[in-house]
Length: 193
Length: 148
Image 1 (tube, one colour):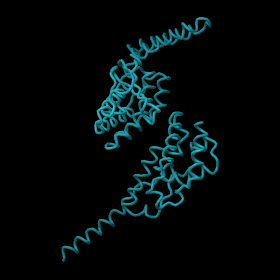
Image 2 (tube, each protein chain N blue to C red):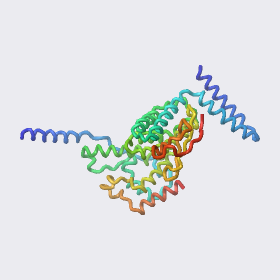
Image 3 (cartoon, one colour):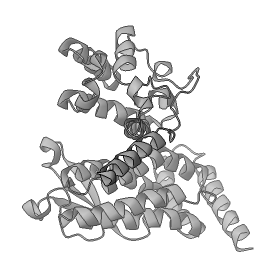
Image 4 (cartoon, rainbow over the protein chains, first blue to last red):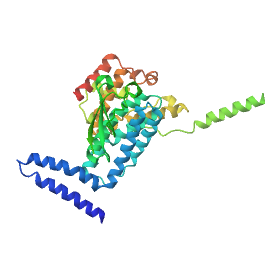
């Protein structure tokens, strides 16, 4: 019964967004309305979905903390957990858009998790995988929601000044790419709720 | 003395015994509709280089050397092939997501430039995988043309 209600709510939201996009000169107002309603639909609409991605974000944040603390063993353990979470993710409640985004990142996330787990003793290689993993998790969070307030950190110096981002739960900079070398180096901005 | 003989005999039995434990081989019959050549217009030279220097570990069709039949060498070899195929399989390339394709090409480029691939342990017994600078650059140029 609850599922039916939720599905109806999601459908109503989509229908609302679709109807609104009809008229031309209200285009600006429409897109902001769509942006405002979509996250609400994903957060309240699907507990299962949030569950799978929530676990992935949990494990990702553990890797992030471990790398900021220069702890390769903890990063490896969390990497293994993340790969397992990706493999075990229950996709039955995903919307078509969520399915598409998950499929685009699934193999990559799993591989990064596995490689981080296999590279205890080579933290720089773990960080290389973490940089791409961060891009993947960011893409998931954009579509699924992060289940918490998330900030985007940026390290401009990483990878010969090409730079890399990471996700974090605080506005304080604890740089996972530099660790103790330059822990407070970088910038942070609020990403999502 | 009799003790030494017994130990030798036991070792011999073990060496013979493990010859019967053979890992499954990576020899799929093909054709391979998801091969990388179906995704990009590969210059024929580049395609040949990939096949001769990479496909043993990065495809569904490994050409096994004679020592793969001798254990435990065959076990180690099979582990390498499995790990290689998990990370990059040219025969499954078309099935990768757009992002994964791009990243794989980017990583190939990095590995070629750093010299990590093909690995030295492989090149040692596979002279055809020892790419000359010209050959290597032709692959890199092709990757650059795809990633533009």
